[in-house]
Image (tube, rainbow, N blue to C red):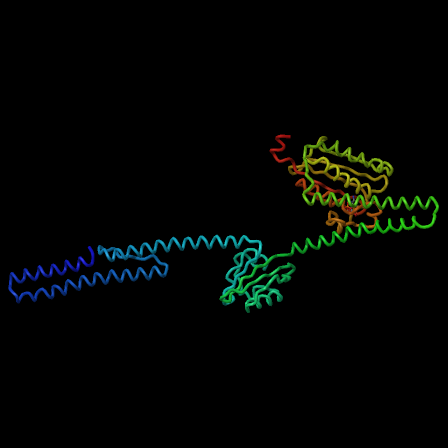
Length: 441
Ligand code: ADP
């Protein structure tokens, strides 16, 4: 029943009561109605005040994010207000849930970024640092973060942060954070907080250095034969010389030209593999047959120096899932090296066996071997243990790096074992065909 109806009803009751009293006892007794009216008014007032206080408490609870405890009343005005509060509570809960979801999504995006992101509030407290920023600065995922001013441990970075906190933006400011090259971009916020974005440039700088070294190496490798060709050509163009000297000069020019052709061929192969332009067409290959063919190409050189070759496959027929052309090139490079570094009457052995879901091959020789400090680097481009010996023997310094790239393009891996004056073994492991391929082959 509504509050108005209750009060009207109360007034009506009072009138009826007064009329009845007047009819029964005359005018004087009418005074009895007054205390009754006061009693009725007090009860009604208390009841209304109690409900209003409950509504006030509910509104307060709502503002504090607590669930409202609304009065259960028959008064329609109070019930309507309670219903409105309940509705507001539900809408607020939905909006907060939505906000929490959006915030979690935004945090997930910031956390997944490759760049480090750091935010500080107006008091310089670090309020956000994503996964990349924590990794760069050496803080664990849950480690508490100090204020922005002391977050970086390197002085140059601290000075940059101080400038941002003083309100100056930073553009592409490069700092060295304990061996890592980091580019900082930062912007002060309106309320004097700041946002920093960190790019890790270490890998980019390393690749730039590799490229510079590579260009320097190639230039050097080409310059030596070119200088030699130019010198001999100039002499040939000069005054008459005897036939034997002329032939000798021409032979030197020819050998330097061939060396440059070998180098350019190796460079082209390397660039095709590294640029992903060498499309491997893998098939099941009987290794014994292909190895025999590859050795045959060098057999003249081997026979001239009485180098013995052995082939040991276990079982007798080992089939590998490889690109035959790539494998020919791999074997050519490995046999070429072995022949170059074995003494006369030395031994070269090719072995193959099934291992770890693939085929393990090895080329061993009993040549000069490689000292332990050089072994980890022999697969690098242009790395040579003895540069002048390698050049004199016609090496380009690229053979093993081509082998490594080719084996890796098959999904395989390479490895070397060696002992000085005992010999060297280069291992290449090739994985089997994926199950659907082997089913069709
Ligand atoms: P290179 O054209 O100089 O042979 P590689 O990349 O094929 O270049 O080999 C790199 C270096 O590894 C060689 O210069 C040589 O010092 C060493 N090396 C490679 N294979 C052998 C081997 N079988 N015995 C001894 N040293 C080797």
